[in-house]
Amino acid sequence: MRAPRWLLPALFTLPLFAAGCDCDGTLGNACSTDRDCDPGSICEDGRCRRVPPGTDAGPRDAGSSMDSGDTPGVDAGPPVCHPLCGDCEPGCDSTPIPGPGGWMPTEETSEGVIVDEGGALTLGRNEAQAFAVWVANMDEGTVSKLDSRTGREVGRYPTIGAMSPAGVRPWNEACNWSNLGNCPSRTAVDQNFDAYVANRAFGNQGTVTKYANREEDCVDRNANGVIDTSRDLNGNGVIDMGTPEFVGPDDECILYTVATGGGNGVPRALAIGLAPPDAFVGDFWVGLFNERQACRYRPHDGSLIACMPIDNFQPYGMAADSSDRVWVVDRSGSGRRDVLGFISSTLMTFTPVAGMPAASSCAVPYGVTVDGNGDVFLANQCDPSIWRYRHADGSWTAVDAVPFNGSTRGVAADETNLWVALSHQNDGFTGGSSNRIRQYSLADLSFVAEHTMPSGRQPIGIGVSFDGSVWAICLESNSAARLEPGAGTWTEHPVGLNPYTYSDFIGFGLNVFAEPRGRHRFVVEGCESGTQTWRGVSYRAEIPASTAVEVWARTADTRAGLEAQAWIGPFPGNPADFRLPPGPVPDGRYLQVELRLSTTDRTARPRVFSVDVAGVCEPILD
Image (cartoon, rainbow, N blue to C red):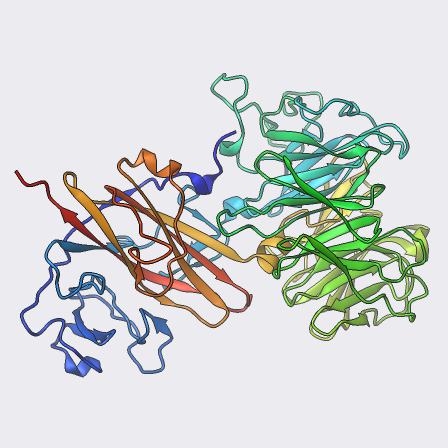
């Protein structure tokens, strides 16, 4: 398997050059405001620094939220005397980043960041990453991949790969809910937008299969120089089975299939957790219904980390939040009302929360989602059919604001709305198939609208896409229906047989609410001969409350050698001094810096305008 994109070195290298330190008694003088400095200079960090001619120095008012250290201000160009170079220390030079042309994040250098209208590097997703809808087709043993913007099916893959563990059922066997078929159901999408599907395999060995979202992350296992994978070759918007458009178990975008639990363990819940500090993809979690436990697996190879008890829950759904909790719902139907709890990924503990109020005639949850405030929403089998649990105060609130009418299944949240799929016309999966979804306001939990599909029937799952569309996965009509909320219009698209998906099958919940993080990397080249010592970096940024910018670094004597080195960080403060803990950063001709941006408030995000890298070249003396 190829290394994940964020482990690859940057594709460009910037040479280190002198900042032109001018210590003539005017530049570098102590200052309190810009008026204390010569024309063409600004006051920053108590020192005067020159701004290159024609450069917009940005906001200079006292209320500016720009952060270039402890003193508000802006440095739009390379510092004349870098704060880590002392008083114009001979041989200490600095490199301005991003340089001419501004920030240019690519898939090779970045993840989860964009350049905003002001030219700043900030959190966001690019279109190539985020617009895939992953639908499990239960009775075909496949997963359909659709483009959420067009609705076209761009790939279809078996849910069992060629290198599957022993004892699994054939990939194309229909599910009989007893002893035949792999019975795929929940899908999940990670921080790299790669996808996972859980195969319940009733009575047999359950599995999870992972798919690469980008073709460059697929694996040329037969070494023929191309990636053999499913494609819509004739451009009709559907993958035609039985043609070269469908490759089968040898599809090279199937990364692995791993066993989960023992025989008849029934992996029914699936979610991606938060990524650890030294990685950008979280472990995946599987809830084993019959074994009444949760298991944690490494994303790069599917290896098992640990399984743990979950208070005798029979897990039916999972969802991660931004506070390192993986929420688990119980659907044992045993009469218990404490049907919701959470796993602490750090502590590896499970905590049930207060039981669902007696105001509900039953506590049998189905779908689960988490919104941007960290509130948990459950679809319940009986009236009230939708509940909100607020962990901050332990409260339960019924969401329904219209008379109960329909069986709620999947739930999903965007920034302002809760979306609910109604699979049947009446309570408890009775009354015939529905063709409706409901929309509620997250602000006050009020009913907003009911949306009726033209021909889609029995929507099981519902998801929100990064393009603003809402998707309903319709079991009976073998379709995925796309709603444009603003216009209220539907388009419906065929998928495989009996699609049965109602988890975070687009990755919106994880990547917007649970873990809004991003990173950008660049490489700086030091002196060709001699010893290159790296002092650190300073950066000009806007960092609102609840957001952060971290600096990480690694060095090597060759550019290719960077990838093998461990990252050191995060370095506290601005400037970030590489000589201090967690450093020192070793000497080396090449320095790679990684900026990690994050927020815990989805209404705020950090913005990085520029970075200056300081270093000293000790030449070889004859």
